[in-house]
Length: 124
Image (cartoon, rainbow, N blue to C red; front, side):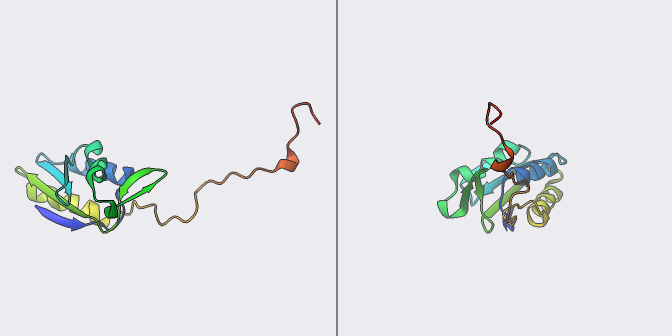
């Protein structure tokens, strides 16, 4: 068992990275947020649902849904023949991954609409 503090927010891309890393191991791996909600680390849905039972101060809500904030505590528990390696790999993914998009100040694509170049339906 290992408890870590998130360096980045936990969203869909992060959940995919964690689930992909967990499937490389035979051990049973569970992740939980401060002991409130426990899920299978190999399931992207279980990892995504960690914020569902979180305390309000540990989550952030935006257009993409609900996410665990940076600074939230995550507990990793593994049981099996390669449990130690599995916990270390999952911890590495949580701590080293740079899949946080909160830092992006502007959206990648912005649409600009110029009314002066549009015409009415009847060509006027």
